[in-house]
Amino acid sequence: MDFRLAVLASGRGSNLQALLGAIETGQLPARIVGVFSDKPACGAIAIAREHGLHTVALKPRDYADRAAHDEALFSAVADVQPDLIVCAGYLRIISEKTVRRFEDRMINLHPSLLPRHPGLDTHARVLAAGDTEHGASVHAVIPALDAGPVLAQVRLDVGRDDTPDSLADRLSPREHALLVASTAAIAGGRARLAGGRWVFDGQSLERPLQLDADNQLRPEPAHA
Image 1 (cartoon, rainbow, N blue to C red):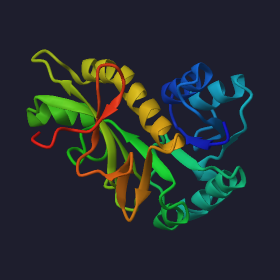
Image 2: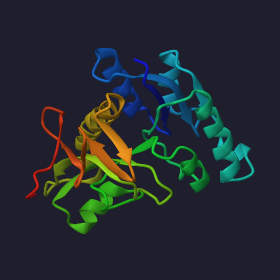
Image 3: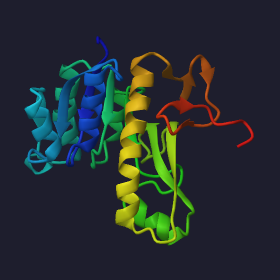
C-alpha cells in the first residue's frame, strides 16, 4: 500500500471512517498518511487519533487571513508527501494559490449531481428546485467552487415525502461508497487526470462514471 492519502475534513468524520474501513478490508489499496482540519475538536480528528494517524488541526482565527491559514495547513499536508488529497467534508474554500500547488492531486466529494447545486445546502436546494433526482459527485478540485472535472457520481430518486434530512440520511451511505470507489480507482491506477479531463481504464471520460448497486464504477451508456 504505497499510495499515500492525505484527508481533509471539518465534520464528524463519516467519510474518513469509510475510507479507513475500505483500507482495512483491502478494498482501497492505499494508506492514510495524515488527517488535516480547520476544526481541532471535530469528529474526524478524534477518529484519526483513535486510529493512531498523524493529525494537524489549525484554527483559521489563529491566522491573519485565509491565505496564511492555507499556507500553514497545506504546508503540513505537503510534509506527508501525499499522492492524493481527499477533501472529505472539508468546509472551507481553498485559495487559488493552494489549489494550483496541488493541481491534479486533489479531489472533493460534493453532495449533488454537479454541475447542479454547487456550494452549500444542496439537499434543501434540490427540493426547492423540484428535482426528481439527487446524488453526489467526486470531482477534481480547481480554483472555481465545485467546478472541477467530475470523475464519478451516484444517483438517488427524490421521493414526494423527502425532506432535507431524509435526503441527507439516504444519500450518506451512497456518498461513502462513491468516495471509496473513486479513491480506489485513482489509487489503483484506473483513473487519472490528463489535460483537465479524467481518463478511466485508458479511455477519456465523456461523462462521469456512475456507481452501480454493487458499488462498482461503470461508464454511463452513450445514449443516456
